[in-house]
Image (cartoon, rainbow, N blue to C red):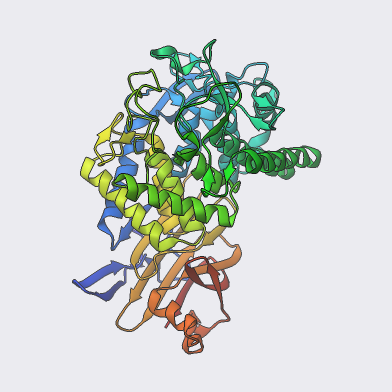
Length: 554
């Protein structure tokens, strides 16, 4: 796509020295008048070429899976889960929003969820997928359809505003239907003995029953063994908190209090029954019947459930740190090309009867899934392990570039399997790239900047078409002059903290007591600043509006 030319536009070229020679970055264009040129698309330039290729694959995946059809609620726009899944799936679409919001208008964010809500059963249950033929179905082995609907709505409301939650779908508001959905989980998928959400015996977050060898494996039946798994607890905990927030924003204080209480109970009971302090991660599940395996099932590291536990906040700071350490150790022990191993070690041969999962390292039984691995990488950025997170994101980006696509899953060595253009992978990787590495958290009313490039260089611009808001920055570290220049601008007016992950050369001065020599100027004038440490990360923090500024640190 070509950016529209603006009269009086000046494009300034910034040249910084790199080991490989001159590295040239264009500063984002500024008009000669105080009025800044608007951002017309989401785009990036990075000194890490694999991140540019990853960005291209994210866009390509969404474009490949884009669907529009006439549904119950009118024209429905959304994204298929992948080439093997032409329907609009709820759990996948909940992940896709973090990517689709960067390129597509409001109908692609909200209409597919409104269609799902129109298929809601009287007991609050929601389907897994809907399609252009007006049909739907549910993989009843799982218990994440309703929670993913709530978590999708929370993301959409932050972009479109809380008024969307009052929209009526077949006579009921969106918010009312979301509450009804989560009530279904409490009334129909809940074990009172342990105070935890229930689901069938699957592999981590998966939807394939252990004992069924054919397509019926996605449905509960007489052979189903019931469990309480960490993935479902993390999903419910996050959904309950977000439903409480949406209720509070809509003036429903009692509802907000109720859902916060439910989240608190899940957290307490998950810690009691699922957290393993000695091992440093959550067990995949506990059994609710007499089934016991003759191998150490509790020793399996469930990537999906543990990653969601960190992202949702179910896992505290120390728990999160131990989970990150375990994920890295398992990658090394089992020789995986990335951190995305879904269940390590996997279930032994023959435990799952379905041919897609009867061997270790197949599909959900130990394959690589960036859908969840990238979420863990994002969480590592957020929890103060940015240097490691950048390395792990780069490994995934290299795998995608080698495969020429973001696959549904990969073998341990990184060979793509399943759908070649998998939307769930694209969504999680967009989250890790834009909110994690580039540190851009943008909503309808606010922008938070926390770039984690450290000693890197990039130009980034983000447009959220559905909200009409944008942000852009140019980040350049000069290792010779020991100078960092951060130019940023947006059409948002909020005032907030801007956090810069310091390059090692600057962060080292703080640890050795030489931070008094640091000079920090905003638009040429000295500005107060402070330091903030989060695990391995050291940030320089200022407070400023996010309209248009040049921050220089040297």
